[in-house]
Image 1 (tube, rainbow, N blue to C red):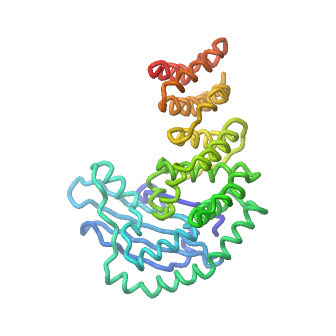
Image 2 (image 1 turned 180 degrees about the vertical axis):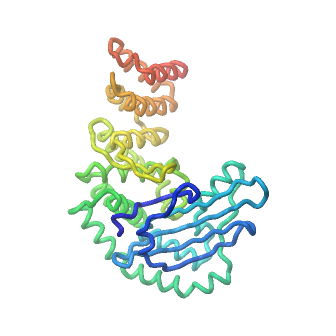
Image 3 (image 1 turned 90 degrees about the vertical axis):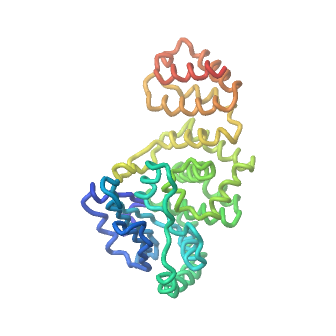
Length: 361
């Protein structure tokens, strides 16, 4: 069952016919009807659980028929496979009445963006909280009781039997959260960043770079516990950790040709995506925080006479690097000019890069 359910799904039920049938096989641990914004809206949150493996899923169904005539409407479902630490923080948040425990649904985020406002908070009534409190406490004690065993199993799987992509990514995220919570960078380095599997390395890199810089999708950031986000942000102040991330990312960017997967939020589907492109993304979003000037000649060497998709990723990364200081713009122009006789000069992406760097020089 867990092999068939994706890590996450964001679906507009006005556009798709149904949610995954495997979802119906999960057990409902908790169900909350959050306080509506108005009489024509509803916001239901459920914590689901695989009866066989004990894996948790967050389920949200948000409906907004519009408070006034011509208001935008929503009928959205969001599904997330929750790492063990996220489940613990979610349950603790309910017990301790911590604001932001219930992530904002996609429909509310979309409306807030269009109206340039902040979404109405997600809250449960005190009456409903007290009604469900016993179940919440029991579930929290249950997952805490097996938490260390689950983490040990995940470590064993990653070391010896890396599974298919969805489970692999879930285990990577779960272990990263655990090690960050424990302030255990050594395990992140040895188990994840030095792993023989480039997909494990790049998924770890993408998690660390995307969330530490705040560049990850808002719909994903909302599901990361606040204390874990704080630990991620501290990476940006630790040179040795940043240097290691850049070192691993550059190696993948310069030489790896395998594929991972990306989620297409528009169609609710996963598609193959080059590890190399994700590694370039990590360099790009961390260029503001880490010294990457020494990578410029090697990145320019990646520019292709035929592959415009690769040129787009490389030039985007070089543009981001050039934004940090004028000297890097000069270095980029110098490296490109050394290839003046090459056909890469015909590339539209390269021409735009030259123009931007010349303006900054």
